[in-house]
Image (cartoon, rainbow, N blue to C red; front, side, top):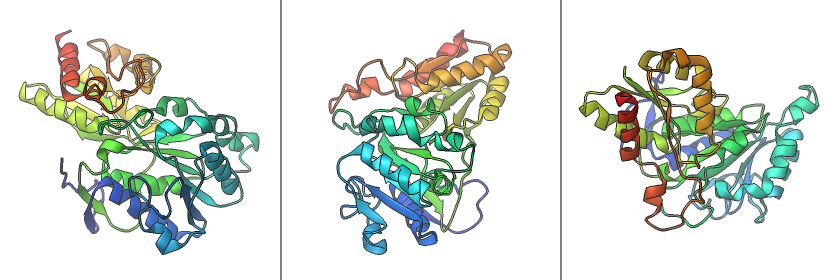
Length: 339
């Protein structure tokens, strides 16, 4: 999939990039602009990360600012908390989002609580990057989508871009945010698409959704790796005469509820698409917000298209059944239209 549209509101120079290249560019810009920025994680230094998102950065900025850590996620997050409290801007990489669980004590007990504990006298600027999601047949625990766990953790922000330009702009905003930000990157999107990305220091505001396509009949709400799936389903629906409005949340916490509610109020129908397991996923939070704030506009029940309540299947073609695809989304669109 190739996109050529210049990001909304940008009029300067651009360069065609993949998402992983845009992330690398953002990290390069942040390191050059502020000596407080430090990048660390498993294999991020010499190797440049398993997906090469930090490729070349250690050679350019030295081992003191871009460095490898042991295979110890709790230590990575715990060290980052200390660095942030000391006035640095740590950018930690968790090699895969499914490896995040050993660090949950640091996250749940400490990371998001310092502003509250100190009555805003102390901030904790820290970014935790992690590849997430499926689509490339990875082994077990390499394709998890744990965003709902983090969204349920007060004091942290959760950002999930779906395009190269958004990845760069949101990451630079996250690094300069005074509070901790989880930054999830869909593995499937790292190199599967290119678009024109603004050069230089380019920011996308955290907390603002993006309208991907406009339509009057159905709203499809999604984020990250599910945006391209929703776009394909929307294109098929358009051929059948159904106008689909695709909303890319971009940020789960804080969520842009105004854009979501305005779209559902216009279309009267909502389909929510995520690849996380069905029970208690973030899709349920979106559905609850719509039910609370826009139920009088609904012409049909809200439909969720999600993963299943089972561990993500490793390697095999079963992944193509587990992970939502355009056909499943198209059926959900038809379901709400036929209600």
